[in-house]
Image (cartoon, rainbow, N blue to C red; front, side, top):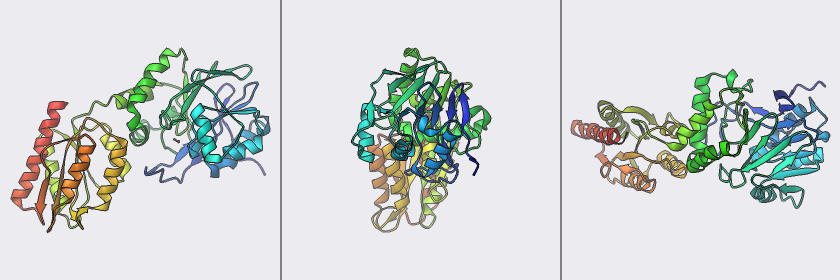
Length: 400
Ligand code: FEO
């Protein structure tokens, strides 16, 4: 049967041989509404080298794309830039199929791959800054610990000047196009921001260090080839400058108001707060959790300066959807936020205090103690909501 899976040329002797996962909709808590790709790359150097593999169910697609160029058994080296299973999931099977001379990973990668696959041998550690001759080309390895796993590293290919950047500079975006210059900028804008907010935001200080370090390494990067989404071969600043801005995090005069509601009272409060924010000159995104996924809330928060969270009290606590959001948000550690908690209650108003406590843990500068309304807000209560929005807007405009 004819092989339908073809490799795509990235540069002279460098090919994309990954897989497109059009149907993926969930990635450890992140709604991948446009699917994703697992990018792997084949370097046809004298020593043929595979950079990363793919998620296990896509092993056949990877091997077929490789086979469209060369017999996979001609691969001599495999480089594992990152051990998360979307990139290493089929590594043991590929190693069995290919029988490479060597597999390379960072020192932490060797441990991580052993922990995942219980491999006793066969993975060789490469150090930060180490180079590896592929015969007529050379790879340089740069450790990027905690971007976003302890084992992460990037690999730079000389001559073609390709930076294989693993998760960094990626996005979850399934597409028939392999290059950023072939895709709609507005779609990439959202998906790149979503990826940064949901994966890399807690490591922003390390992103800054990497962006400062890359030019000093003397590696003339002409192509950025990440492990997810499109490859950047033109206008690399498009993604580099976005990363610099997101990592530096200078919040805009923008607020995210998010809530869930039981019988509509907290929703009415949220809308009144939003009116106050708008009147105070703040750009607002109102995100009811019944209509917005947690990962989209985080995406909107990436450039926002205020976060307001609301829940009614249910059985002495906040609604599960709000707890879900806060658990997720806390881990992603957004910084430089002002905010407030709000919500309605019947006979026991616990939710607002609980939300306020989480906002405090997150380092959010709260405006007031939190706004509670018994049962259904009346005109006076709604006026207090508008006033809360105006106060947050005022504080935000002082900061921006
Ligand atoms: Fe795409 Fe951290 O794996």
